[in-house]
Image (tube, rainbow, N blue to C red; front, side, top):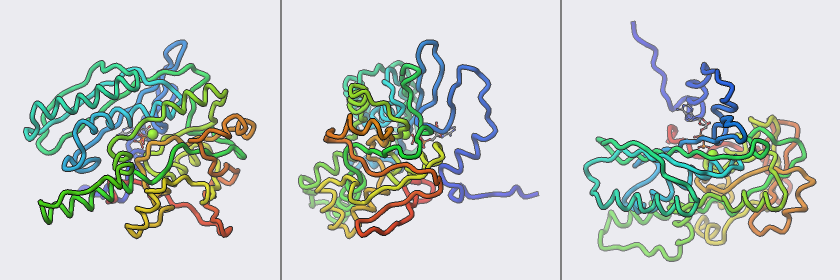
Length: 344
Ligand code: ADP
Ligand code: MG
């Protein structure tokens, strides 16, 4: 008898994770939070340990024709540290697993690890293990990060409450536009190998894609200001998509205002150049690795002058109502487009 066959693309990444994880119950008292947040939470006595894994796959997450392998090493660590920051924790250790094809030289692997080391120094984390194997296709880097936080300091996706203020750090959409620039220049180069791209004008955008930083600075500054976010997530999928993650986990809806969404000037101009809507890039671009968090209204005063924290909206009780309010006063339903590798 024929086995039924369903396409993974119909489920999408999150549908697939829900499907494979639904029959797994947590058995150990030390497993405080399993699947569904930026990191798992494990009771380690005085503190909670935070554990998260992120994998980067050649041809899916990066293209070695324009991503220098050293930057790739740095980014692989940074995106993991970012998940620990999103739990309001401090990353302490990583393990690094690589699958390499014979296209790679020893020198290329050296460069990869130079990037990994630079990130370890920058974020104060120790490389404590990993695994090495060969790959018949491309390069795969999988990093697991272990972090720590005092029990009462861990921040989940589920803690947003009605009337909380929604905040984002930095600016949004630049990494996506950096990718558009690199893809365009790659095509130009493929058509004429004498053409060498002039990327100076787009340096910021390309840097946002190839060398993202985890916002550990924000975690420290919020603590200094005496603010504990009520919920937090790092923006890897795109603002709209990540709003839905927090909305679903917290059981609240969000109303955001288009004129408060931070967009860098070059990102804005480049979007126009590519005939893209800058706001759509900011909402759906992904890979910004900024933090999005909610705070109690009473805490807003404490961070209102922070130059890199933007108040973009607020939470309300209607959990199915995630909307964007335009300058003209129109209300538009948000859609979670984001990155979904299975749907490409
Ligand atoms: P993030 O974007 O913060 O890295 P993901 O969207 O990758 O998080 O994952 C969402 C949640 O699903 C996380 O809790 C992650 O640990 C879990 N998860 C992802 N893939 C799997 C898998 N194959 N098996 C079990 N859990 C998974
Ligand atoms: Mg995350």
